[in-house]
Image (cartoon, rainbow, N blue to C red; front, side):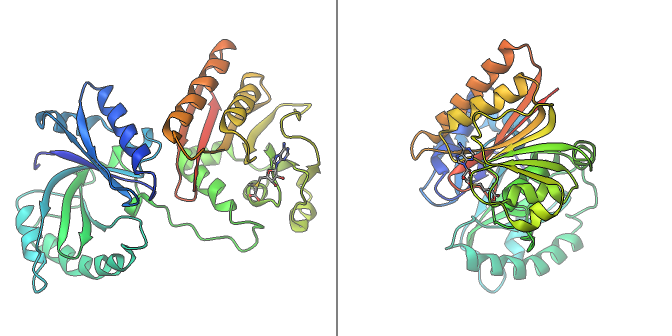
Length: 353
Ligand code: SAM
């Protein structure tokens, strides 16, 4: 394989600072120091270790699923500038000749400016894939790295690689979800994506079974409740606001107009979901107390982030939750991610082991 010299991380436009802070911390925990190039609203960050020899080792250890603000994390193996309009295929093929890849993905930053480039990528993918297959570069072996071409424009591209196990399985790190028309709010996609992201297919089958019980804090009008009801899960919906009548008609929803911070179920439930708009630290404490107190086994919750120090705020919530759970001797799994459908926010998943 070509040596990895630096890293390319995709993120939500406007969160380059958070993504850069995070990769610096991830690298530092493995004794790798380096610098970031992160242009505001570009939708990506470049991280270069000072000692290029360390990049390859770091590449094998980084895992995008353990990052909060990065949607994808790739090893950069080359960069091409001035691709000729008449033949862009040949320079790309020549750069990777003699190497094997399991697939090739053509990507751009997730910004408005890059939207047109997406059309170019879809068109260019056809002849490029044909040429790479003809040259024996693309092979059907999932153990070999995947090739990512990250286009800055139609003549400038980063050549990147990733290993399937440490990377996002979605093009541009974005799951394409269709809005379910029966859902009462677009927020429904946040919970759908969270279930897809935090749980494997087997876990979804095991932990989201018909007849289970859930509490939805800050439920109105019911986008999150909808995701649970469509899985035939009983929901206690807590909100002073009105719930969509179709959800109440399902016979699976009990609506209580009480305060989300005071309510506790009489009997433990399987799931807590929480989309209350409040200070993140208050939500983090509330969710940790539910799990530590044995009120639920799993929790998915949204943390609305402040304008500044957003990375530090998530870390603060993580620390506080860990402290509450450790004080009760609870073994747990706790992860955070800025999902594609999250805006100025991140989603957390807490599970009692
Ligand atoms: N998840 C919902 C959906 O998918 O339709 C959207 C929830 S909305 C972002 C936040 C909700 O939290 C609002 O409906 C608001 O009334 C509710 N809320 C805010 N503070 C609350 C509290 N202390 N107790 C109960 N509900 C609260």
